[in-house]
Length: 358
Ligand code: ADP
Ligand code: MG
Image 1 (cartoon, rainbow, N blue to C red):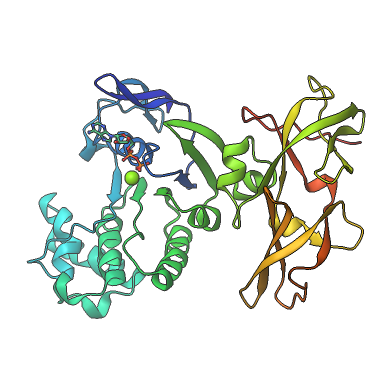
Image 2 (image 1 turned 90 degrees about the vertical axis):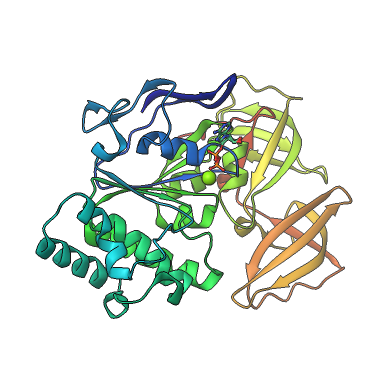
């Protein structure tokens, strides 16, 4: 996509998207509800006209190509199965309409049913299927068409938590098996992190950042991405710059101690306000740490413990500790962190670039 825009009347919903999706990539569009994920996917599918800019598929401008001619198949959150047809008929319907001979049709339906473990359900009607089985039929309808690109719009949102996890794995397996290009929309950053080769973080109709899951996790380009990717969320606290130098930017912490973060100090000066970002899993309870406080709550999840540590009445840091953590509640403790894994952001959003040491 190049400079792709979408307006409804005066309201611009998609505000100029430049994006490359490579052959066979699993790309996830992620962002909060209403940010334009479905609209962008529907523009690719041809279900929404592109107001301005270009959509190229295999080097050909596709803006004006009919949806049925684009070689794409879309799977929706609402499975949209035909209730009066069996699973086999649902799977084969698009091929029947396209005039595919009966034998080839049956072969393709059988193949898709095998891939999706639906072979024993081919005679059932949708109402006699579970949610996960219905979703698999919806995916199967896309598979039989052998599309160049699969488009998924929140396909797992109607499933319960356990089924979502197993369908997530099935979709990843399917991606490997079919070796297909997939574009997948979700508001769930965990789905994005676990499934994607490439994540596109959208916010208010614009791209905030594009990268692999770990690029976004390790190097969020701005406060929005920092807060959106990772669970529990990154701790963000407003601080003042004490000094700047060749080793980075030194900030003053709530207790008065300082921390020097190895980031580019260009255009930063003492007294500036910045936000310090610290992931919960990077903070550790340690007697000489620079953050003094008290753990007020402990969420014990078995494999890990989430501590809520009050530093000041206005500032609580979330710490991810081990499952067997024995930190006492309501008594003085200290938290430490390695400066190399800290992030600094300007109040208006962008991250300060890390220093590349020789
Ligand atoms: P998401 O899928 O990220 O939740 P959508 O792409 O569905 O978001 O919607 C993005 C924005 O576009 C929303 O603010 C929505 O209200 C608006 N929108 C979607 N479709 C239309 C339409 N047909 N007319 C006007 N506004 C629309
Ligand atoms: Mg949507």
